[in-house]
Length: 274
Image 1 (cartoon, rainbow, N blue to C red):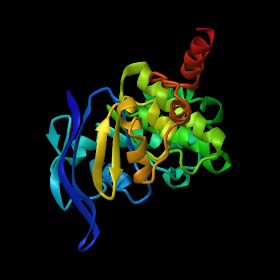
Image 2: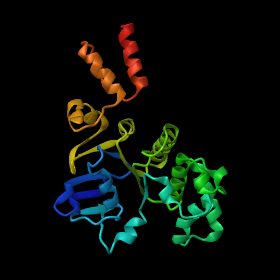
Image 3: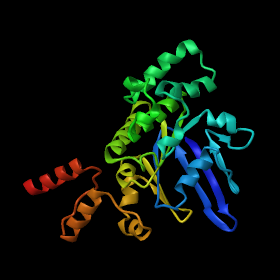
Image 4: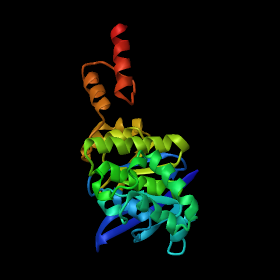
């Protein structure tokens, strides 16, 4: 069942210069989907349109069967949360606890229940010990974890990560990617990640590749990354395991599809023993 449907979406930031050109796709409920593309491909524009932060020139967006419009946007925003790329732009309070509480207050949650909810979700992202700290004293990865906790506290059925790791150092990137994987694995919440991180996309259920405002290709990771020439032609890289497989095949060594370095090593070891 599709929880997000996008139909023939067009959008322009400037007159006569289309950022999106007839984009259509659907995202299954409970899936972990990545939208992959180089800078300027239109992937972040899609995230903002789905969240109702921009208005499409034409086309339709359905969230959980409900058409996005001025009349339904308030209801739809209760179903989704979005984590942006710059963590510094997401804080409005003077402490981590108050920042997580902000969304709960807007949802009129009973103040007597608030502390337990805050503790639960701060603990889930490893930030419980930082609840009384000022956001300015946190690392980029910690700030993103707080942003995720604030969203989880409001129980959205869909979470959008809009380049949420692009401004983080390598440690912060890995922290946030692990949380994304864990969130999807724990309760099958629908995850939509806008990214140019090839290795992250490799671990998702489904990939939508964008190029010059259009959908270039959709499919499962092995279907997408098997098209090594096509991806390179539109300026994208391929995962390390596929590079190794490609190099081996040039030497006449056929390797079956593998997702991870560990799986690839096991296949190579089996071939050596044979």
